[in-house]
Amino acid sequence: LGPLGDVDFLRRMERLAETSTRLARDRRSSAFASSSGVRVNPKPNPNPGAHEPLAEGVHPRTLKLIRRLIEEARGPPLFRNASRYTGAGVDPPPMDAVVDALRDAGYARSSRTHFDAAGVRTDAPPEEIRRIVSEVVARR
Image (cartoon, rainbow, N blue to C red; front, side):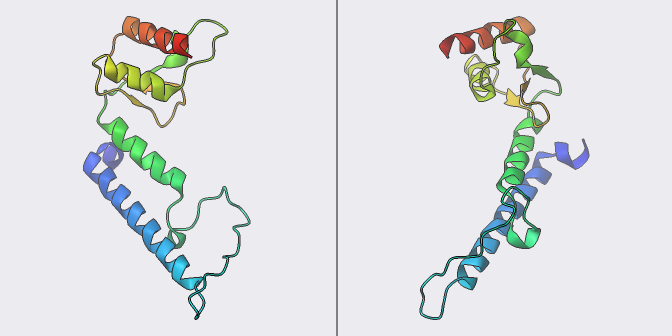
């Protein structure tokens, strides 16, 4: 993984992204203020789903990805797809609920993966994952 597996490197990326976004927000705020101190409406973004350039800060999804990578880097190297542990025709439970339940069961290093929406990194054995996923599904 190189630097993307290094928590210190990822923390620096997170700080830079937060700083860039804060500075861009401050620049936008001061640019849209009139001389009388009244704020005027900024021009709307014609493509709100697109990533903004660095000069405009970091897109929230990018910051979310960096934070997920930090969480993943601390976890076990392998992952499981939690949807494989649900019954046929049953929608997989929310992954955040599965991760929380795994942590509550003593698997503190459990986390979501950035590359699989139903993926969880955990050192829990498959039987335990199946039990926990079943409990989370039953609570819905």
